[in-house]
Length: 134
Image (tube, rainbow, N blue to C red; front, side, top):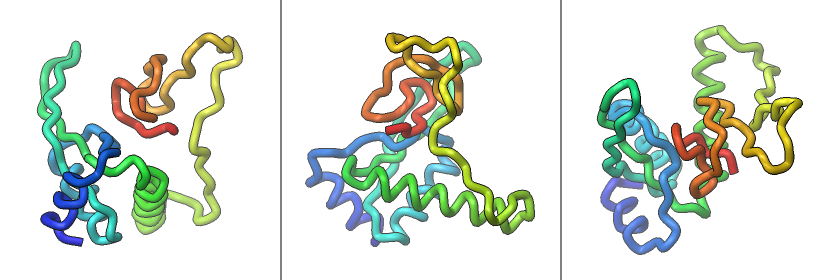
């Protein structure tokens, strides 16, 4: 799929969501991976400031209906890269979600396994780092 085709599909879709907020370099790699798999994806602007300062980030945009395929594809690509580097046992199975802390009550939001933010999900993703959890 070409970037032009992906943009055309995303413009017509009514379920476009941010998959992740990442650096420009990594965002381009993610979009290229998704396009090569036939999944429409594009970059969107996302300038965020945090307590540590401001840095430009981009949003990787995909259709909500493609989220499971996107997550599976990118997880597989990451595992293949890690195994190629010799850092992972080929039989390693990584849990999708970390176990919640023992003192977590029903009313508490579980912390994000990537950044530790305990806040409601936004479109199925961590409201701080953008990790897709649902």
